[in-house]
Length: 639
Picture 1: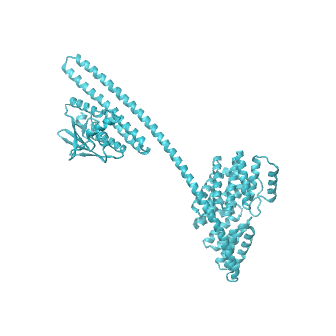
Picture 2: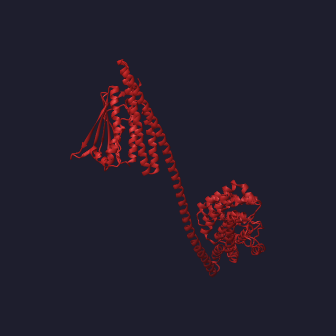
Picture 3: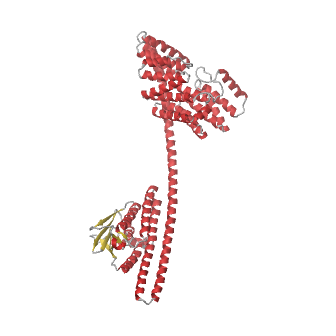
């Protein structure tokens, strides 16, 4: 894993430092350049961007060989860059701190600095910087065996690099984009290898290896990854071929991994002498440069190789391998715990941010609903005012007709004008009924929004808009179908049920067969009785209420029986007398006047009767309204 990190670090930083790349035991500057930069920092103390750059360049040289020194210089570069507002250097200093803490195994701090760097690159709209951070975060998840998350970050990084070739060329002009994509492919291959998805790992490793050879780079890393996959697939000849290739440059830790890989192949082939030869070279070099993972693998292989010829040495090497393994395990365990704690905090912060966004969105939706509701009220009030003006005009016209009736001597003309006046009066009452009904509905919606959540309020508004549309359309007509009348009634009852939290049920029953599409009645006759039953009876009842509506038809008379199990009229009057709000209900009064005019104009016998119901003990058990009316059939209305 360290090879991938170092190669990516090299590709990302080589032209940022504007000085020559030199390789000693790893990647970084030569001793002369380091001493020169240190001297400049001690003699020139001006705090400017040049000093920030020098601190940053020095941190580059120490990241892998001496991460503590790398942290010191990177942190100094970070603080100075932040003070100067030198954002690009602040971002890369965060990246170097993340790299140094990664080397030390403190993945929680490493992730923290990578995320800070990524935020800065996003602010500056530097996609290559963002993709570099995604690659680095992917390596952390890979070290923590989170291969799925690692692959997600690797693929996102590769896609960003492919989509931004110009930005990549501007940052690293002398290294082709294919080289960076090649490293991405190899990182993806290693993640698939760690997750034991060997076919996918082989595909990406081959693609990276082929691209490396086409570019003429002949780096160690592609062959090392491909060889590891072949070894895992038990294709030992192919693995050995990869390990024995000639490379232009090979870092010491890569040479250790190659020798360990060759030794492992000979171990599988049961060739202890060859295994011992390569494992010894790997172990000696690993001890020299303090490469503990390399020393652990080499000592384990040497333990096996010495088992048959020198059991004492075998035990010694096994002990060394176990000691290093335990030490690395303790360090890895601590790193894992710290990272999990950091990840949990990060998740909590993301959850909090998501919750805040949701609350802001909820507030916005609430505001939109209030605005929409206000506009709806304004529209309805405007419509209501228009209806009122029409009613006044109709009443004025009625008065004029009455004056004409007094002046006319012809009885026939007088009768016709009286009939016309009655019709105008009927229209005026319907115009009054319309604003009354709208007012009651708006009052219900207002209370519901104040007491209930916005989702339910939206549902309530949807039903209300549908009901209002029907009311406004049907209130213009002298007769509507019983089907439309019942549909409006059901919409109203559904709204009231929702507002009163399902505290009552309703049931509409046909006693005999009624063709509701062929039966026509005056509009909005049933709703005032249902409203009266709910508001003055069921609303004050303890327990579940029930509103029953029974319809029957006989000899051109439509009978509607509306029964509720509310508190009854006496109790309702008592409650109303104690209530602060003593508004007079106009619904039934207007309905009485409408029925009187309907009977007069159409020679009909429409009336209603209200009965008080009692139980076996003589206590109030509700109210029953019996409404009888003449109706018209479709042919009569059309004619």
